[in-house]
Amino acid sequence: MKVVILAGGFGTRISEESQLIPKPMIEIGGKPILWHIMKEYSHFGYNDFIICAGYKQHVIKSFFADYALHNSDVTFDFQGANRIRVHNNFSEPWKVTVVDTGYDSLTGKRIKLIQPYIDDENFFMTYGDGVSDVNIKELLKFHEAHGKICTITAIKPDSRFGYIDFDGDKVLAFREKSKEDVGWINAGYMVLNAAVFDYLDGNFMLEQEPMRKLTTAGEVMAYRHEGFWQCMDTLRDKNKLEELWQKGAPWKIWN
Image (cartoon, rainbow, N blue to C red):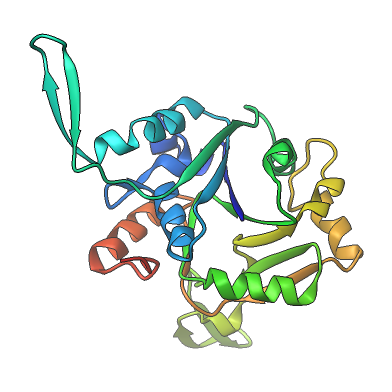
C-alpha cells in the first residue's frame, strides 16, 4: 500500500530555513522531518512512498539518490581504476518515487498528479511537516471498516496560550488552556480511496473545495487520536521538536 507525502510547498512561515531547502527537508535530530515521517510508516510495514515534490525538489531527489552511500562506510580508491567501494551498506527497505507536482500547485492538484502511481484501492496520505505516534495499522482498520472514501486523523492540539477567567471585567484566575478547551483539527495521516481522484479537478487545496464536496456526500470519517502529534509550521515548532528529540521523541516508535 502506497504512502503519499506532500512535500512541494514553500513553507513561508519557517522561511528562516525553507528559503534554502524544502520545508520537509528541515532537520530534526540530524535527519529531515520527512525521514521521521517515513520511519513512522515503515515501522508498521509500509515502505512504498510517493513524494509530491515541487519547490526545490532537487534537494529531495539528491537526498534519496545518495541515501545509501551516506549511511555506509566508503573507500575511495584513487589509484588504478579509481573505484568506490561501499562497506556495511545499510538503508531502510524503502521504495521512493519523487514526483514533480509543480511549483505553484495546491495540495489537491499535487495529489491528483500522482494518480498514475496509485495501483491500489486505498492509499495513505499525509503532510510532510507533522509527526505523530498514531497507530497506522489501527487507522487503516478503521478506514476499511467504514468503507468511505476519506479518513482523516483528528487530534486536539495543545494551545500556545493560556486562558483568563473573568467575572465581568474582574480577573478571577489565569490558567493553562487544555485540550478540553479546543476543538478537533485535521492532523493529516489520512487514508484515501482512489475514488478521491474524481473530486480533484482543478488547482484546489484538498482541504477546501474537494473536502467540502466529500463531506457533503458523507464520505469523510475521522479517526480520533489522543496521543502525540506536532506540526512544524514555524521556527518555534522546529525548536520544540528538536528539544523533544533530545529528550526521547514521543513520535519515535521505531527501534
